[in-house]
Amino acid sequence: MTGKATPQVISTDNPMVDQFYDNTQSNVIRITEDKLKVILLENKELINKKSNFWTPLVLLITLILALCTTEFKSFLSIPKEYWGGFFMFCTLGSVVWLGIELKKTKKILSTDELTDKIRAQNQPKPSK
Image (cartoon, rainbow, N blue to C red):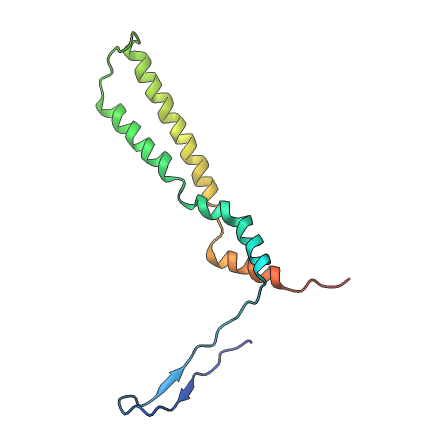
């Protein structure tokens, strides 16, 4: 169905309603349950990774705040310089982790892309 359809005017017996417009034309995608499950399972990992960047982001913020506000002291026979270095190393690690997670979020399918993928799976394959 291509083109825009004009809304249908439906008469009503309700005295409070003059006219009732029916504009519910939409595209319908018919697909079998097993095909839909396969598509969703293939994309499940990408869908779940949409919010995985929060953990490294919050960790990075915490470590930056700790580095800015803490005066490291020797503890457990470890000199204060090593503690500062350890926190710097952890901060660098969470920057790398955040970068990896943000790169993964760019690969996540939007709802329109997933719908297009489902629609494409349902198209008949051209015969050779």
